[in-house]
Length: 309
Image (cartoon, rainbow, N blue to C red; front, side):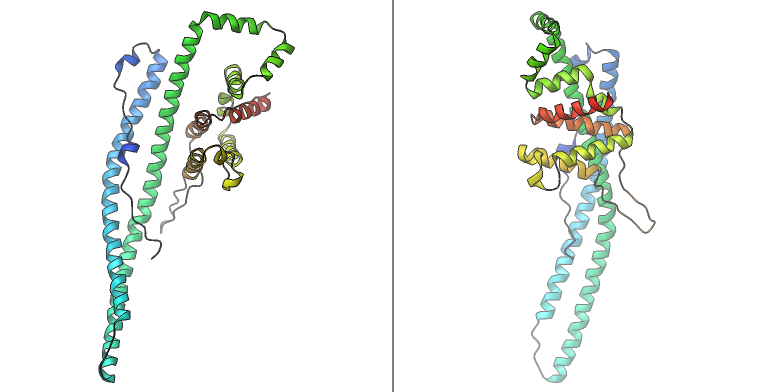
């Protein structure tokens, strides 16, 4: 059976979520920040418990599948040898040996089929659980990255507010005529333009204010625009294959969801909640910034601002 696959060892360390060990970081937090911090830490702790439980189950299934695939390989080897076996002797002996060999091949095929049935019973439920685990893992990792990025942004803004020269400069800029401001803005980089829109209008919040169906359409549209299936037409691929791969992996994981159907008709198609969809969308903007695609952020920010107005 060509569809039979081995199950790889679970990359435990890449899934594990380290908990915050520096309590100094919480001293100057507001009540709201502390609440968000503790909620995320609890989520991470709960996920690590799930990871430990799942890893045990994963390894057990992996070893069982390994035994099954080894048995199937042995049956295939025996069947091949039996089919290629040289039979000699008189006609009566040859006929007897041929019939005996057919029975032995039939027996090996039956054993092989039983192993294949056993494999399917193990692998299909495993595939479902593995997909659900991968989604949960990806979601908590995205939340953690977004949280850290938010903390870094807040710290940077605090430092900027302390800079008296910058405050004076911004005040001066704000007093200039609109026409002159437009000319100055035209020379800004896309990073600066995107940052201005983000600070002035909070377009990410505008996106997140959409209804669930609207959020899903935006995510699908962004993926189709920047990371379509055809690599040659993909802006993300031209920028960096890693960005393209990450976008395609995320979309496949959460939205192309393979459906599994069993005898009881149970359907495991995944459906992101509205809060998870918001996390996904926010993470896409974080990805774009990490890969220095500020023009994409600017285009998307401007689009939602124009639509909302």
